[in-house]
Each structure stands twice: as structure tokens, then as C-alpha cells.
Length: 308
Image 1: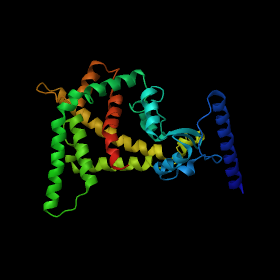
Image 2: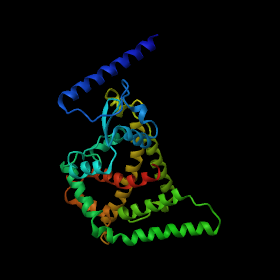
Image 3: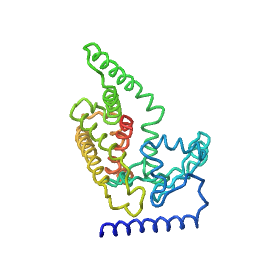
């Protein structure tokens, strides 16, 4: 009976909190676009279900190109047409650039140092964006790395041919993962991380662990009352995964710093050398923490594609 009473009190508290935030939002903002009917506390969470891409497409047929969903206590506007997306992402991009930060990415304070989650137009965000534009995505840099991309694809094709000759099955996902990891690590560190079977396996396990955590519905993302509690332990496990990656980056950076002290050292002209040059000239603009979290974003994000 005590358990039922406690559960009832919790439900009533959630209803009151949700009603408070809803009335507060209505007093200050324009009414949201129409959307499907909601149920108390959970909103449209059950309608979204386990296959949100299919659910949202089905709902869009009924409610139009722009609709409102209530995900717990969060009001979400869903855009489902190319014309509407262009209007928002191109004409009003500055207004919609900042992202809602999932609680999982608060692990190791990544949301305060990772470029993908920083508020747009802050000094740190602008500085990291400038580095990426000049040192990674500039046409000059992309052209200079063309031979590297071609060589990695040729190695992938050669590995597939070798397996075919001996009659071995080819794990396409693993082969693509290895190729992508080697290309990224060569661009940043000038060596193949996947050459070490232990390192490649470690990366794969970390990526798989993170995707498993991100794929779980997190109460803290939908109900403000649970935001800081980490009831499901997702943020705690993400802290472990991110910590493993940053420890690996620290070992690589320390080794590179030792090499740079040698009189006969020749710069690799890779991204790591560029970041360390900036760090030596102005540590306040790019300290070790920002370097680690930038490397985490650059190495980790492309690898997630093989699991989502």
C-alpha cells in the first residue's frame, strides 16, 4: 500500500510540474503548431514508439509538414518536408542552431567543451569552428588528403579480394569500420589506429557501448524532475566510455610532445601538430581539455554511422 501511495504521489507531482511548465510557456510564447492528442505525463512518447522514423512519417501524413509533439515535459516541433526544412535550416539557421543536449552527453562535461554542443557564437565555439574550417574542411586540405582517401579505399578493396580468393566471408561492417578509423586516424595522428587489433577492438567496443546507451530512452531527457538524477546510469556509463577515449588521446598527445622536443623532429603537418602549435602559442584559446574533446567529436562521430 505504501508503494502504491508513493507511486500515486509521484504521478500527481509530474502532472503538476508539467502543467506548470505548460502554462508558463503559453503565457510567453505563441501557440505551437497542431499535433496529435497527448496523454497525461507521457505526452506522445508511446506514439513515437521504438521506430520513430516510421512513426513520425505516419503522423506527418495526418498532421502536416510541421507538427507539435509532447515528449514527456518537452515540447518538440517536427519538420517533415524539404521546403520547410530549407526555410528553417537556411533562412533562420542562426535561431535554430543551438541544440538540446541529451543528458548522456553531459558525461565528463563534454557538453561544455565539445564543439557540437557548445552554444553558437560563443568565443570557444567560433574558435573551434575556425580551426575546423581552416584545417579540416578547407578545399586545400581536402585536396591534400585525396591520396590518403584513395589509398584507404584501395586497401579495403584489396582486403575484400584477398578474402574472396581464400573463400572467407567478408564482414562489410567491420571492413568499413577499419577503413574509416584508419582514414580518420591518419588525418589526425598520421598513423593507422586499426593496425593494432587491440586498439581497433577497443574502439569498436567503445562505439558499440555508446550507441547502446544513446539508443535507450532516458527519463532525464523527457522529465525535468529526473534531469540530474541519472536514474538509469546512462551518464555514468557514458563517462566510462568517454574516459577510455580521452585516456587514449592523452597517451598519443604525450608521445607526440616528446617527439616535438627532439632537435631532429620533422612536423607531420597533421591535425594534431596543428592543434599543438595553437596550444603552444595561446593555451587560453585551446587548452588540453578542448583538444581532447575536439578529437573525441572528430574521431567518434563518423564511426557511429556503422551502428545507427
